[in-house]
Length: 497
Ligand code: NAD
Image (cartoon, rainbow, N blue to C red; front, side):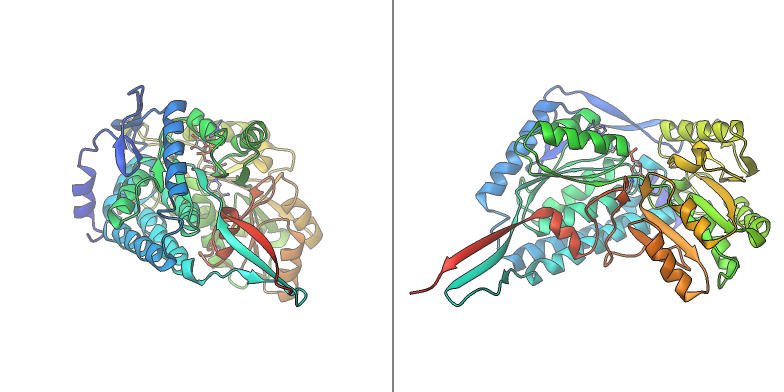
């Protein structure tokens, strides 16, 4: 189906039936038969339900995944056959892209143009990337003496538990599911209670593509479902994207259970440094607005702190403010709108509270600052910019995960890097300059997992994404992602006479 308003309107009018867990390639009603209402952030109305699972349901899913793994039906399938199944899965996602994207937008409010590209289409690309790698990753032979053969083999870890957030569930999900499956593992997936529908949908497509029962299972519900997964003795690895507070708990759960490996992709408060010698200040202003206001700021690598060189401070701020006020916030399924809604009422309230606090603490409001379209029942907020922020203000330190930009000026390069590094986070950074040496200095000086120079793009599947400091551990994307889902096995074989 083509991306046009008529098709979107047809798809959004469809009823979404009650959803179950999906275990062993079958719908599976939770033992308690309890459900959670799915509320659309577009209008605040309930439009479906998901299973409210309990610990026993998690146990059932993990046991199924473990049995499947031990049977070798997937782990021992010839690599090129696994590749064919994953490639078919990617094709099915692509064929159904608009249907899946509209469903996801009804669940989490991302503007449809961004959702279709960033969600099903990216997920399909990511799955293809790892599918293609399946039969190209070799073991190794180490250089030992003549009498010994020393092998390094790469084995799947077993059962991987994946716990996801509500922003970009398919993209972030595919970053983890695809390499975990490509490496031969079985997966139990716990989507966010605020964005489960599109993930359930693509899991059903995986079954249709030929993934054997029990290899990819979905179990929905609130945080305690993730807790049951992370404390389960038969889960070997937890791969998580979400908040630092939950990440901290996952480390404790691991210590209290089987010391499973835990990989965390957490939050950020990423700096965007604009030097007066930036090659194209107009582009820098446009990308700066994009970097914080797309998906209403609900992007982990949003550049939420703008640090501008003093001589261009007011002019650049005004240019970004102009871009911000040209954005049209509204129904994310209306192609005329450039920006959708916040994902849920908690996110909206968190943003509203952060705005109040920033004013109380003395930041200068440049544009925005208000809830929008209250009458629709949906969760919309104006793109908002504060200037003259100080290091000690909450707006400089705490991740809001909303459309709020905190701007300030700097006088020296050293000061800019000190400000960039003064939070607990280290996810991403952006720098604008024509000075090549300075660009390289900034990459070294700023403690972040990714650095972007004279662009804001988010990069692609070939480059790893991971946090420094309290933004996480381990990497999604690129071939490095396999490290999370494999065990190295060393064998030392005496071949002397
Ligand atoms: P969250 O931490 O509230 O929830 C994430 C998941 O954890 C959900 O599925 C939730 O049900 C589950 N959960 C909650 N309590 C749990 C518990 N006690 N044990 C186990 N699981 C539990 O995060 P969110 O609000 O869904 O997402 C927003 C956060 O995600 C932001 O901080 C954002 O920066 C981060 N994020 C990071 C990246 C990245 O790549 N670094 C990408 C996207 C989002």
